[in-house]
Image 1 (tube, rainbow, N blue to C red):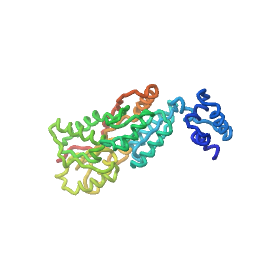
Image 2: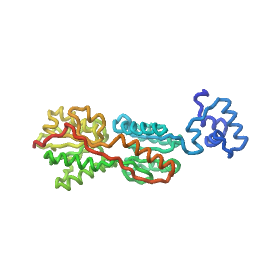
Image 3: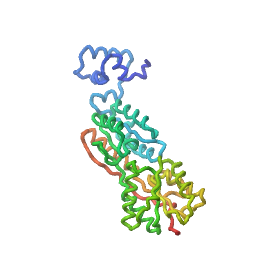
Image 4: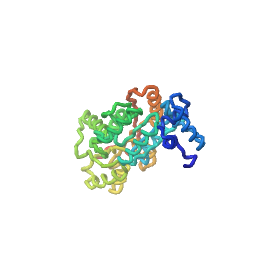
Length: 346
Protein backbone atom coordinates (compact mmCIF):
# COMPACT_ATOMS: atom_id res chain seq x y z
CA UNK A 1 0.00 0.00 0.00
CA UNK A 2 1.14 3.57 -0.73
CA UNK A 3 1.85 5.44 2.45
CA UNK A 4 0.00 8.58 1.38
CA UNK A 5 -3.20 6.63 0.69
CA UNK A 6 -3.44 4.71 3.96
CA UNK A 7 -6.65 5.15 5.93
CA UNK A 8 -7.70 3.95 9.36
CA UNK A 9 -9.78 1.32 7.59
CA UNK A 10 -6.59 -0.10 6.03
CA UNK A 11 -4.89 -0.12 9.42
CA UNK A 12 -7.90 -1.78 11.02
CA UNK A 13 -8.03 -4.49 8.36
CA UNK A 14 -4.30 -5.30 8.62
CA UNK A 15 -4.31 -5.21 12.42
CA UNK A 16 -7.44 -7.34 12.67
CA UNK A 17 -9.36 -4.77 14.70
CA UNK A 18 -12.26 -2.39 14.09
CA UNK A 19 -11.83 1.18 12.75
CA UNK A 20 -13.21 2.42 16.07
CA UNK A 21 -10.39 0.59 17.89
CA UNK A 22 -7.82 2.26 15.65
CA UNK A 23 -9.43 5.62 16.40
CA UNK A 24 -9.27 4.98 20.16
CA UNK A 25 -5.58 4.08 19.88
CA UNK A 26 -4.88 7.27 17.92
CA UNK A 27 -6.74 9.26 20.56
CA UNK A 28 -4.81 7.51 23.35
CA UNK A 29 -7.88 5.95 24.91
CA UNK A 30 -7.33 3.62 27.88
CA UNK A 31 -10.09 1.30 26.66
CA UNK A 32 -7.84 -0.64 24.26
CA UNK A 33 -5.97 -3.81 25.28
CA UNK A 34 -2.18 -3.59 25.10
CA UNK A 35 -1.98 -6.33 22.48
CA UNK A 36 -4.28 -4.51 20.09
CA UNK A 37 -2.68 -1.17 20.81
CA UNK A 38 0.77 -2.56 20.00
CA UNK A 39 -0.44 -4.03 16.69
CA UNK A 40 -2.00 -0.73 15.64
CA UNK A 41 0.99 1.38 16.69
CA UNK A 42 3.36 -0.93 14.85
CA UNK A 43 1.42 -0.28 11.63
CA UNK A 44 1.22 3.46 12.34
CA UNK A 45 5.02 3.51 12.54
CA UNK A 46 5.41 1.22 9.53
CA UNK A 47 3.34 3.46 7.26
CA UNK A 48 4.22 6.77 8.95
CA UNK A 49 0.47 7.25 9.28
CA UNK A 50 -0.90 10.73 10.03
CA UNK A 51 -4.53 10.58 11.28
CA UNK A 52 -7.12 12.68 9.47
CA UNK A 53 -9.81 14.75 11.09
CA UNK A 54 -12.32 12.03 10.23
CA UNK A 55 -10.22 9.31 11.86
CA UNK A 56 -9.71 11.39 15.00
CA UNK A 57 -13.41 12.08 15.12
CA UNK A 58 -14.54 8.46 15.10
CA UNK A 59 -14.37 8.18 18.86
CA UNK A 60 -15.80 11.57 19.76
CA UNK A 61 -18.39 11.58 16.92
CA UNK A 62 -17.41 15.07 15.75
CA UNK A 63 -15.57 15.15 12.44
CA UNK A 64 -16.50 18.70 11.40
CA UNK A 65 -17.80 17.17 8.18
CA UNK A 66 -21.24 17.47 6.54
CA UNK A 67 -22.37 14.97 3.94
CA UNK A 68 -24.56 16.47 1.19
CA UNK A 69 -26.47 14.18 -1.16
CA UNK A 70 -28.31 15.95 -3.97
CA UNK A 71 -30.26 14.82 -7.03
CA UNK A 72 -28.09 16.36 -9.74
CA UNK A 73 -25.46 19.06 -9.33
CA UNK A 74 -25.94 20.04 -13.00
CA UNK A 75 -29.25 21.61 -12.00
CA UNK A 76 -28.38 25.23 -11.03
CA UNK A 77 -30.91 25.09 -8.18
CA UNK A 78 -28.99 22.34 -6.40
CA UNK A 79 -25.53 23.70 -7.22
CA UNK A 80 -26.52 27.16 -5.95
CA UNK A 81 -27.83 25.67 -2.70
CA UNK A 82 -24.63 23.66 -2.28
CA UNK A 83 -22.36 26.66 -2.84
CA UNK A 84 -24.38 28.63 -0.29
CA UNK A 85 -23.89 25.87 2.27
CA UNK A 86 -20.22 25.25 1.47
CA UNK A 87 -19.36 28.94 1.80
CA UNK A 88 -20.87 29.19 5.28
CA UNK A 89 -19.52 25.78 6.34
CA UNK A 90 -15.93 26.74 5.50
CA UNK A 91 -16.31 29.91 7.52
CA UNK A 92 -17.43 27.79 10.48
CA UNK A 93 -14.47 25.40 10.16
CA UNK A 94 -16.47 22.55 8.57
CA UNK A 95 -15.82 20.46 5.48
CA UNK A 96 -18.52 19.25 3.09
CA UNK A 97 -18.65 15.97 1.18
CA UNK A 98 -20.67 16.41 -2.04
CA UNK A 99 -22.45 13.33 -3.42
CA UNK A 100 -24.16 13.70 -6.80
CA UNK A 101 -26.86 11.08 -7.46
CA UNK A 102 -27.27 12.04 -11.15
CA UNK A 103 -31.02 11.35 -10.77
CA UNK A 104 -30.22 7.63 -10.49
CA UNK A 105 -31.64 5.73 -7.48
CA UNK A 106 -28.87 3.11 -7.62
CA UNK A 107 -26.17 5.79 -7.44
CA UNK A 108 -28.11 7.49 -4.66
CA UNK A 109 -28.14 4.28 -2.59
CA UNK A 110 -24.39 3.87 -3.12
CA UNK A 111 -23.76 7.39 -1.88
CA UNK A 112 -25.99 6.87 1.15
CA UNK A 113 -24.10 3.73 2.13
CA UNK A 114 -20.80 5.54 1.62
CA UNK A 115 -21.90 8.46 3.82
CA UNK A 116 -23.04 5.98 6.46
CA UNK A 117 -19.50 4.56 6.62
CA UNK A 118 -17.72 7.93 6.55
CA UNK A 119 -18.84 9.01 10.03
CA UNK A 120 -19.88 12.48 8.94
CA UNK A 121 -21.50 14.64 11.63
CA UNK A 122 -24.74 15.29 9.71
CA UNK A 123 -26.20 14.28 6.34
CA UNK A 124 -28.27 16.73 4.25
CA UNK A 125 -30.60 15.12 1.68
CA UNK A 126 -31.60 17.37 -1.23
CA UNK A 127 -34.13 15.83 -3.60
CA UNK A 128 -33.97 12.24 -4.78
CA UNK A 129 -35.73 9.43 -2.94
CA UNK A 130 -36.65 11.69 -0.02
CA UNK A 131 -39.07 13.58 -2.30
CA UNK A 132 -40.98 10.48 -3.40
CA UNK A 133 -44.54 10.12 -2.12
CA UNK A 134 -44.12 7.71 -0.50
CA UNK A 135 -40.39 6.79 -0.44
CA UNK A 136 -39.66 3.26 -1.64
CA UNK A 137 -39.39 0.50 0.96
CA UNK A 138 -35.69 0.02 0.15
CA UNK A 139 -34.95 3.74 0.50
CA UNK A 140 -36.94 4.03 3.72
CA UNK A 141 -35.13 1.07 5.32
CA UNK A 142 -31.69 2.39 4.35
CA UNK A 143 -32.33 5.94 5.56
CA UNK A 144 -33.98 4.69 8.75
CA UNK A 145 -30.86 2.68 9.49
CA UNK A 146 -28.64 5.71 8.91
CA UNK A 147 -30.77 7.92 11.16
CA UNK A 148 -30.10 5.54 14.06
CA UNK A 149 -26.42 6.58 14.07
CA UNK A 150 -26.13 9.84 12.08
CA UNK A 151 -28.44 12.90 12.23
CA UNK A 152 -30.14 13.60 8.90
CA UNK A 153 -31.66 16.86 7.60
CA UNK A 154 -34.37 16.49 4.95
CA UNK A 155 -35.12 19.20 2.39
CA UNK A 156 -38.52 17.64 1.70
CA UNK A 157 -42.02 17.81 3.07
CA UNK A 158 -43.11 15.60 5.99
CA UNK A 159 -42.86 11.88 5.32
CA UNK A 160 -42.33 8.82 7.48
CA UNK A 161 -38.92 9.91 8.80
CA UNK A 162 -38.43 11.40 12.25
CA UNK A 163 -35.78 14.02 11.49
CA UNK A 164 -35.07 17.73 11.10
CA UNK A 165 -36.32 19.46 7.97
CA UNK A 166 -35.22 22.50 6.01
CA UNK A 167 -38.01 23.62 3.69
CA UNK A 168 -38.57 26.35 1.13
CA UNK A 169 -41.40 28.64 2.21
CA UNK A 170 -42.76 29.19 -1.30
CA UNK A 171 -46.13 30.49 -0.10
CA UNK A 172 -45.32 34.27 0.05
CA UNK A 173 -43.58 34.24 -3.32
CA UNK A 174 -46.33 32.20 -4.96
CA UNK A 175 -49.04 34.46 -3.54
CA UNK A 176 -47.13 37.47 -4.87
CA UNK A 177 -46.70 35.86 -8.30
CA UNK A 178 -50.39 35.08 -8.73
CA UNK A 179 -51.39 38.54 -7.45
CA UNK A 180 -49.00 40.08 -10.00
CA UNK A 181 -50.47 37.99 -12.83
CA UNK A 182 -54.04 38.77 -11.73
CA UNK A 183 -53.10 42.45 -11.87
CA UNK A 184 -51.97 41.99 -15.46
CA UNK A 185 -55.40 40.61 -16.32
CA UNK A 186 -54.55 36.92 -16.52
CA UNK A 187 -57.35 34.45 -15.82
CA UNK A 188 -56.32 31.33 -17.75
CA UNK A 189 -53.29 29.53 -16.27
CA UNK A 190 -51.34 26.36 -17.03
CA UNK A 191 -48.94 24.70 -14.60
CA UNK A 192 -46.35 22.59 -16.40
CA UNK A 193 -43.72 20.16 -15.16
CA UNK A 194 -42.98 17.38 -12.74
CA UNK A 195 -45.14 14.66 -11.24
CA UNK A 196 -47.73 14.79 -8.45
CA UNK A 197 -45.91 11.93 -6.69
CA UNK A 198 -42.91 14.22 -6.02
CA UNK A 199 -43.53 16.24 -2.86
CA UNK A 200 -42.24 19.71 -3.98
CA UNK A 201 -44.34 19.42 -7.16
CA UNK A 202 -47.40 18.28 -5.22
CA UNK A 203 -47.05 21.18 -2.76
CA UNK A 204 -46.65 23.82 -5.49
CA UNK A 205 -49.62 22.51 -7.47
CA UNK A 206 -51.80 22.38 -4.39
CA UNK A 207 -50.79 25.90 -3.39
CA UNK A 208 -51.50 27.39 -6.82
CA UNK A 209 -54.85 25.59 -7.07
CA UNK A 210 -55.87 26.96 -3.68
CA UNK A 211 -54.99 30.52 -4.69
CA UNK A 212 -56.88 30.23 -7.98
CA UNK A 213 -59.97 28.79 -6.29
CA UNK A 214 -59.87 31.54 -3.67
CA UNK A 215 -59.99 34.04 -6.52
CA UNK A 216 -62.84 32.15 -8.26
CA UNK A 217 -60.57 30.92 -11.05
CA UNK A 218 -60.65 27.12 -10.73
CA UNK A 219 -57.80 25.53 -12.65
CA UNK A 220 -58.79 23.23 -15.49
CA UNK A 221 -57.33 19.74 -15.14
CA UNK A 222 -56.06 19.68 -18.72
CA UNK A 223 -53.89 22.72 -17.90
CA UNK A 224 -51.92 20.75 -15.31
CA UNK A 225 -49.29 19.05 -17.44
CA UNK A 226 -46.89 16.38 -16.15
CA UNK A 227 -43.31 15.79 -17.25
CA UNK A 228 -41.27 12.77 -16.22
CA UNK A 229 -38.20 14.84 -15.36
CA UNK A 230 -37.40 18.48 -14.57
CA UNK A 231 -34.98 19.34 -17.39
CA UNK A 232 -35.06 21.93 -20.18
CA UNK A 233 -35.95 19.28 -22.76
CA UNK A 234 -38.93 18.11 -20.70
CA UNK A 235 -40.38 21.62 -20.85
CA UNK A 236 -39.51 21.88 -24.54
CA UNK A 237 -41.28 18.63 -25.46
CA UNK A 238 -44.35 19.57 -23.38
CA UNK A 239 -44.39 22.98 -25.09
CA UNK A 240 -44.19 21.51 -28.60
CA UNK A 241 -47.39 19.55 -27.93
CA UNK A 242 -49.11 22.42 -26.16
CA UNK A 243 -48.39 25.10 -28.76
CA UNK A 244 -49.89 23.11 -31.63
CA UNK A 245 -53.21 24.58 -30.46
CA UNK A 246 -54.45 27.93 -31.78
CA UNK A 247 -53.47 30.93 -29.68
CA UNK A 248 -57.07 31.60 -28.62
CA UNK A 249 -57.24 28.12 -27.04
CA UNK A 250 -54.06 28.55 -24.98
CA UNK A 251 -53.79 29.84 -21.41
CA UNK A 252 -52.58 33.42 -21.21
CA UNK A 253 -49.98 32.61 -18.53
CA UNK A 254 -47.87 29.47 -17.99
CA UNK A 255 -46.07 28.68 -14.75
CA UNK A 256 -43.23 26.17 -14.98
CA UNK A 257 -42.47 23.93 -12.01
CA UNK A 258 -38.85 25.12 -12.12
CA UNK A 259 -36.87 27.51 -14.27
CA UNK A 260 -35.32 24.74 -16.42
CA UNK A 261 -38.72 23.42 -17.50
CA UNK A 262 -39.89 27.01 -18.03
CA UNK A 263 -36.92 27.82 -20.29
CA UNK A 264 -37.78 24.77 -22.40
CA UNK A 265 -41.38 25.98 -22.67
CA UNK A 266 -40.24 29.44 -23.75
CA UNK A 267 -38.03 27.94 -26.44
CA UNK A 268 -40.96 25.89 -27.78
CA UNK A 269 -43.15 29.01 -27.75
CA UNK A 270 -40.59 30.94 -29.78
CA UNK A 271 -40.36 28.13 -32.34
CA UNK A 272 -44.17 28.13 -32.59
CA UNK A 273 -44.08 31.84 -33.48
CA UNK A 274 -45.46 33.04 -30.15
CA UNK A 275 -44.18 36.29 -28.68
CA UNK A 276 -43.19 36.44 -25.02
CA UNK A 277 -44.78 38.25 -23.23
CA UNK A 278 -47.03 39.85 -25.87
CA UNK A 279 -48.87 36.63 -26.77
CA UNK A 280 -48.22 34.55 -23.67
CA UNK A 281 -46.58 35.15 -20.28
CA UNK A 282 -44.21 32.79 -18.45
CA UNK A 283 -43.05 32.47 -14.85
CA UNK A 284 -41.22 29.79 -12.88
CA UNK A 285 -39.56 28.71 -9.65
CA UNK A 286 -35.93 28.63 -8.37
CA UNK A 287 -34.54 32.01 -9.51
CA UNK A 288 -30.90 31.14 -10.15
CA UNK A 289 -28.63 32.87 -12.67
CA UNK A 290 -30.53 31.19 -15.53
CA UNK A 291 -33.54 33.44 -14.95
CA UNK A 292 -31.36 36.53 -15.40
CA UNK A 293 -29.56 35.53 -18.61
CA UNK A 294 -32.41 34.06 -20.71
CA UNK A 295 -34.26 36.21 -23.26
CA UNK A 296 -36.57 37.62 -22.14
CA UNK A 297 -35.46 37.40 -18.53
CA UNK A 298 -37.73 35.20 -16.42
CA UNK A 299 -40.09 36.30 -13.66
CA UNK A 300 -39.38 33.82 -10.89
CA UNK A 301 -40.15 32.72 -7.33
CA UNK A 302 -36.99 31.76 -5.45
CA UNK A 303 -35.40 31.45 -2.05
CA UNK A 304 -32.81 33.64 -0.37
CA UNK A 305 -29.77 31.52 -1.20
CA UNK A 306 -27.47 33.50 1.08
CA UNK A 307 -29.68 32.54 4.03
CA UNK A 308 -29.75 28.86 3.11
CA UNK A 309 -26.22 28.00 4.24
CA UNK A 310 -26.72 29.83 7.52
CA UNK A 311 -29.91 27.87 8.22
CA UNK A 312 -28.22 24.55 7.44
CA UNK A 313 -25.27 25.31 9.72
CA UNK A 314 -27.61 26.36 12.50
CA UNK A 315 -29.34 22.97 12.29
CA UNK A 316 -25.99 21.14 12.05
CA UNK A 317 -24.72 22.73 15.25
CA UNK A 318 -27.96 21.96 17.08
CA UNK A 319 -27.83 18.32 15.97
CA UNK A 320 -24.20 17.95 17.04
CA UNK A 321 -25.14 19.18 20.50
CA UNK A 322 -28.26 17.02 20.58
CA UNK A 323 -28.76 14.31 17.89
CA UNK A 324 -32.39 13.99 19.01
CA UNK A 325 -33.15 17.64 18.22
CA UNK A 326 -36.18 18.04 15.92
CA UNK A 327 -37.07 21.21 14.07
CA UNK A 328 -38.69 22.39 10.84
CA UNK A 329 -36.68 25.39 9.59
CA UNK A 330 -38.03 27.54 6.76
CA UNK A 331 -36.13 29.43 4.06
CA UNK A 332 -37.92 32.63 3.01
CA UNK A 333 -38.84 32.88 -0.68
CA UNK A 334 -39.94 35.89 -2.68
CA UNK A 335 -40.84 37.04 -6.19
CA UNK A 336 -38.48 38.66 -8.68
CA UNK A 337 -40.33 40.38 -11.53
CA UNK A 338 -38.53 40.45 -14.88
CA UNK A 339 -39.62 40.74 -18.53
CA UNK A 340 -41.35 37.42 -19.27
CA UNK A 341 -44.82 38.56 -18.08
CA UNK A 342 -47.06 41.13 -19.70
CA UNK A 343 -50.67 42.23 -19.97
CA UNK A 344 -53.15 39.50 -20.90
CA UNK A 345 -54.12 40.35 -24.48
CA UNK A 346 -56.95 37.86 -24.86
